[in-house]
Amino acid sequence: MSVTAQSVWENCLEFIKDNIQPQAYKTWFEPIVAVKFTDNALSIQVPSKFFYEWLEEHYVKILKVALTKQLGENAKLVYIIKMENTYGNKQPFTERIPSSNRSAVKAQDVDIPLNNKNPELRNPFIIPGIRNVKIESQLNPNYSFENFLEGDSNRLARSAGLAVAAKPGGTSFNPLLIFGGVGLGKTHLAHAIGVDIKDKYPEKTVLYISAEKFTQQYIDAVKKNNRIDFIHFYQIIDILIIDDVQFLSGKSGTQDVFFHIFNHLHQNGKQVILTSDKAPVDMQDIEQRLLSRFKWGLSAELQSPDFETRVSILKNKLYRDGVEMPEEIIEYVAKHIKTNIRELEGAIISLIAQSSFNKKEITLELAKQVVEKFVKNTKREVSIDYIQKIVSDYFQMDVDTLQSKTRKRHIVQARQLAMFFAKKLTKASLASIGSQIGKRDHATVLHACKTVDNLSSTDKQFKKYVDDLTKKLSV
Image (cartoon, rainbow, N blue to C red; front, side):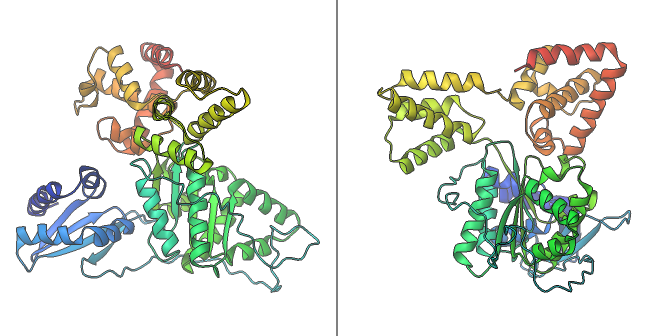
């Protein structure tokens, strides 16, 4: 990387940082790398085509102003899109797109030739013996964008979902992979996208299915020698939504057939929406060629909602159910149930039920009893901040030292242990863990976890560290 490109871009970033929200700057500008500067054109590398389109749509004006301030009216900006190489070449390949040109070359993949001699496709959702040509979407109309409240924890995923619903198959969010822990709204958001598409485009065929059911259908199709019909059925879907795609782990036959279905849909401009409990980089026993497809579009994480969002979720739930509740009780429930939206709504339903069945007024005391039961019956998930605090205290250092760039052996080991326990005890992605523990990348976290596993089996002192910290962090 040339020094000139770096200095030009750093000066641009100073201006941009002063003119946009800190979170937006962190999300959309920190990952950009300045590559070269020639003929008054600055080339910057962005992580994906999605990134490029988002910048062009939302930040093109500020980029133009920042660049003009540095280089004058004739300044040019060239995007280099880093794309994953799935064809076995050692070098990654890139797409170069001038900022004024929104078109991009799409890498094509070869689909399997399928000769369908029978024009009548067998719908796996039809009960045998009952003739039904219409494909039901299997969507739940109660899951809508209206009751999927926006907050910092879900803004990117929700915005991407709205963009997909407005133009299915026509954005670079294809596939859209929504991932996160249990009860954070992945299924809700997937249904909401499908419901919105059905409202806007009633002529399109939308289908929601769990990965488990998809697998069972495929097994049945193989048993009945209907594999080709199964594939063709899924190839006529316009918007395919597959829930809990991590369920395909280890199922090579189902992965193979889904790979070919995915390729066909993607090449024909059809939309694929996936949900998972983990990011692609953390998925085990999924074929590399399939994982690379998952990374083509956008992977958007749903995180635990903050306090304000939790309060909004509860108020929305109460409003929809026609129930009034004092503000202090809503805030008490929101303050004490943090990890899971499903638990949050469950606690409020339980509170209403207790009040109704026992003919008791909803009081703060009753709320405390209900919440206490919920907290007691639910295994708590410790936070990454808490893990860092416990590990730092154990090694008699502060958290800043733990997160620092130093390569001193005892500090590196403490950091690796924090990463190991964060992966073990939280549902956070590797990228999220690395970001919170000293702004490292996911590869560093993966290396740390392997190092801890190796040292635990070969170094007695290190094994004692792991055992001691396991006791301190037990939940």
